[in-house]
Length: 118
Image (cartoon, rainbow, N blue to C red; front, top):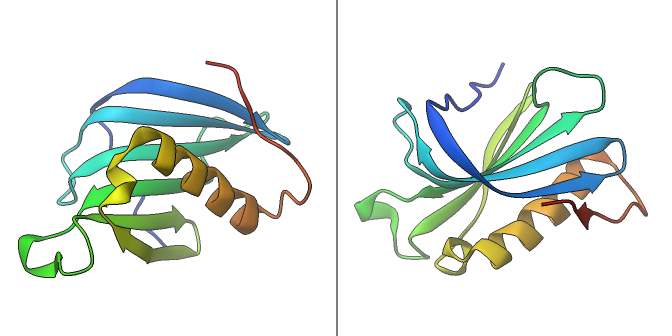
């Protein structure tokens, strides 16, 4: 089982409705985790109390930055993987687009289109 991010504090930057999920994009994240998060998008299914999927932008370790300073990591109950690495993920709009596309694929949302609510 995967270890979900522990979030002490975070500032909601954007919110989306995406099919039967609400997606919250968090920034300015304080966490006791070893990972240093720049952004986290948490996908919460309607009626659920906790997110079922996290798409994270986290800082790469200094000795792992040849392909970029930020890692794209996905975490759910069955998966904890690094999918990409790029400097571009540091941009809020770029991360939001990548995270929504990644969530769509993992959660099988098909033709659903996200709409921003905040």
